[in-house]
Amino acid sequence: MILTAALPVLANAASAAQGHLHFADLHLNPVAIDLRFFQIKWYSIAYITGILVGWWYLLKLLRQPGAPMARRHADDLVFYATLGIILGGRLGYALFYAPQLLTTWGLFKLWDGGMSFHGGMIGTSIGIILFARSQKLDWLRVHDYLACAVPFGLFFGRIANFVNGELWGKPADVPWAIVFNDTVQSGMIEPARHPSQLYEAGLEGVALFAVLWFAFWKTKARYEPGKLVGLFLLGYGLARFTVEFFREPDAQFNQWWGGFFAHTIHMGQVLTLPMIVAGLYLIVTAKGRRHRVVPIAGDASVA
Image 1: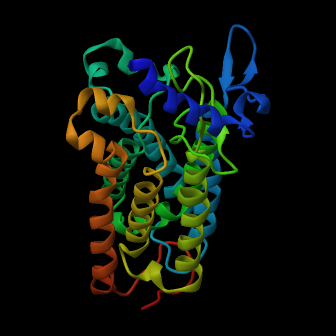
Image 2: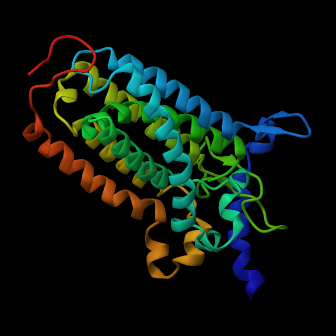
């Protein structure tokens, strides 16, 4: 009886895999440089590239009128942000997805993978607030400018997820579906799946950057404290919430936070709900926070 019930599932999986691109045929290797005694992985390069490109773009934004900080502040801010990304990302992963790491030395094994964007965002925000207060800067406006640079890191990070063949989507029969490796138990037929990593790279990286680019360069959003970071939170929240419908649920979430709740909504969606609410609030109330901006860098102040 069990075999009879499983036959339709196996048939559908085999049908879905036929004619689709196999991930193995792309010959992608998570390791970019292998010196035998030391390896550099594409995921590490993605983090570094995202930070460096984001830093370059932040300096470009700071050259415009009304900037909330100077170049010297941006150079120091990168250190605080990087520290927040690493510490917050790892602690967030352990707290939201793998609580068992909190009681073992595995928490410090960053080379084994496991980072949470939401944790990294919280860690970075704490770092920005501490830095801004120590330099007597407007922490919310600093957040606005940094938010415009974050999509670079999101884009490179999701591309690295794809190269690693991880965080794949649900089984699908769309023409662009891909047959990833080791997504089911040994002996079972690998189904074609949504390349959800690329969906996220397009929405969280390219589309979100375009929205923030337009808001910064074509509107007066940067003179309304909180509006740009609000757009980021809302845009990321909606993008992530949408893509999660096409992404395979996190195995850790089902293990630690199982039950009806885990099967109706993913952890990624749970964590984006506060972001969506906070983003809407910041956007709606931004005009009320508008004031005469006395720039630290750039031209004369703008009302």
